[in-house]
Length: 357
Length: 90
Image (cartoon, rainbow over all chains, first blue to last red):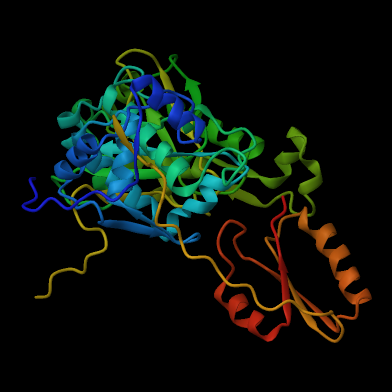
């Protein structure tokens, strides 16, 4: 969309000699993730804003804990640095607005010693428009769009929220998803409802789901066609996470590749059926902590049951992955239900009042 | 080539600290913890020091979510105290 009057950008501008000088300039100020960045020129930033139909000073939100106001211009500067094309920017902006919701607990998830990353799941027609792929290498560097969008979120956290390691980011380990953690659902090759529709977005929209995710825990089961056996492997991985990492229930993402999907869908299972099965199977007793070296915190509650999901709706089932291989993934939450996944529709005002009748 | 500053130039406004107390003698002092295990020993020691220095009352309050701002009822209550200590532990 072309704005009729182009408001000026207000970011401070610096003169640098060339591309190489720009790299050293940005690295020396702690403005990067350690990799080269695209120099954010005025023209490139304006192109992002124009594509999204946002004036530079549009307030995308105020981070609730540190009361940091975030404008479209500043987010666009970081998106350009990450390698985003203008058409990627509406996805970045929507993800950022979703992250600012109180229930996401942005400050907690990004500053914690727990070291999770903000995962972005893209749904709807926008995936095809921007070339976001949910097939081969889906959780890796599958395509330009998901790589750049995920990186834009991380660079924006570094530069807009001071989330540099050892500053506000206190992660003990972190994980590689903190460079970029973005995934598109493979909607063309599934019979299931897309994630954003399942989570209440209107049909026909594109949507973004943000999730405070630990690193992916990969599973493999190529030796059965029974949905229950396949899903039992996912549930077992969730139980392992409960014992080895955090026992508390909350949102979990599971990524189901085509080879396993074909068996599950072929047997008539929906995402809801999967979530109900996993809800029943992914749970541990507190006493099991004693088997993994955590006996001292069992105390007098050995028989207390801890479900990995507080309800079946907590499970985010995502269809993604290359066409061959019985490899799936469980992506645990940062810390139980202290953070909640948030879904927002792209181009739809998430805070607007419904129209008066 | 001109490049733009990627940082937040619209920083949040800071807060103004209250006047410092001359002593803790006769004062009510609050301790707000994030409820993690590592805070207990530290703040217990701090309470002992405060009482040695004459604090009449030391009030402990725990945040309900260690990663979120303190609960509204604690914010309300701390207006009745003379001083507050807070910090995070793991």
